[in-house]
Image (spheres, rainbow, N blue to C red):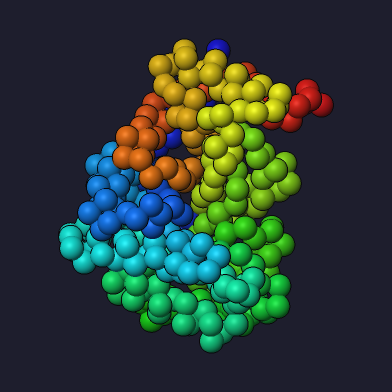
Length: 304
């Protein structure tokens, strides 16, 4: 039975020409549990030493409902200040556009401030990828595009992406941008398969966007399945995982990576061993039959 191709050792981030690892590490929980700069540095090294050089954070990471806005960026900034050579070993991505206690703000003034504030906290002069975290329905995409294009022109940002945008919202913003989007970051996992069927991944392939999958383990449900559907998907992943000597987690990452859109799963763990383990996903082979078995389990019904 023919096998699907293995993921490449590196991917190109959209049309940017920037090479990234085919797996990313996300820092949503980096600032939790009193983590020090030394603790954070060990996590950064665990990712980079495993070949995971694509690091994704956001200005909202660390916010607990009342405080902590910017804490994850600031903690990474401490790591980079202590070890400046690390910056050249990573492709650094961040996000903005959520403004507590407001839901979202992508007005021109706020976006400019958000980008500058992220650079200050990260202690860098530019980020490789800047993404709008969630769409602001009250912002005209032409106004948003003008600010983002200026950020590219000024050298503060190398390329642009979005997160949690619908296909129509992506198309509208991209229409007004001079520097076109290179990435989109929706929630995708073997338990969250909406993107496979609603046209988002088809649009990504059409526009040349690199999809970055947040919560690729279904918010932890793949590691501790609860419902009958969760357990069916876990079993389908386990069939491949056990045959190839990897964990279910690694099988889940590799399942996403087998899609032709070039999905980059974002590892959310803040455990050095689990971060490093993710690199094994590059070695997992899928057949069409095995891949579709996971999809059918996720759908809960046979394909038409």
